[in-house]
Length: 230
Ligand SMILES: [Zn+2]
Image (cartoon, rainbow, N blue to C red):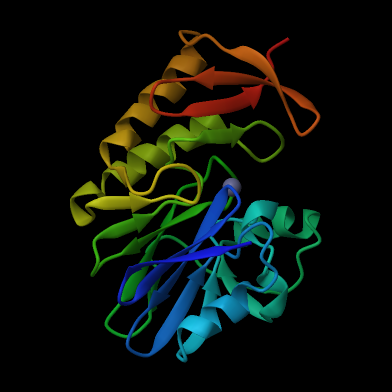
């Protein structure tokens, strides 16, 4: 059962068994950011909280972020998520968004930042007025999935360095998993952890995730689940 928690007068987080998504309201429109893992009624939940015209923006198309997408004909998403979305039988039309695009909710502009790596089309969303960054799965203190097709740790590091260019534009980070909020210093730690993995300086252990044997690199600040090096 999804739990709806009010953050402030125009922002909610919806907790959905290990994953969360957000509802952001502007003066004219409201935006759902993702639709969770077990929440086909995400749209109904949002419409119970606001009467504004509702749009949907997805941080990426992994299955734990799109469970309620089917009730939208179209949604904002990086076009680089097309393959990921269709692999999860995701229907609906992608309205493509990219770095620098601004989605205006009415005195609440949301700026798109491309951060590929976790998936090819992962994005972060900068809520400029509230000085919050919504980071998807890429910045969080849980376990970041980096195994399987389309995921790339080198690209991820470049994206995190890109994200650091924006750190004077937000105070808090709202991730989709783990602790909320997390602090922006986490970005630097994630870069260093990922660099340690690539350089062979980090020690991993084999764990099973959804029937896959993968390598878990556990740091004090977060974990990375990577392809097992045989
Ligand atoms: Zn996720």
